[in-house]
Image (cartoon, rainbow, N blue to C red):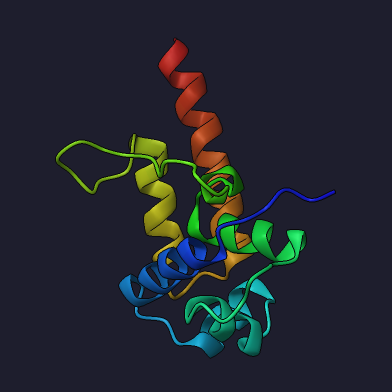
Length: 123
């Protein structure tokens, strides 16, 4: 049985992320493959449930973990700042926000950067 999801919080977070990147619902649909109708419903709080695949796709696009949207889960906090937790996360945010990259390319580049960063940090 799938775990419950706080779709309202997901919708608020999705809307904020989309607005911060200056994207339309149509552009978000093209980047995620999630229909415009579903995106709109989630953002405006019109959904009580969400398909697991849709949740994973939206979380991947936002660069967050699906566990953050369990009912009662505390959203991650970064005291006194809105910046990402570390350099790889910051690079990923910039790559995902780049309008010249599709979402798959941004994710692959972010994964490559993270692997290189972690390897070099050990040396």
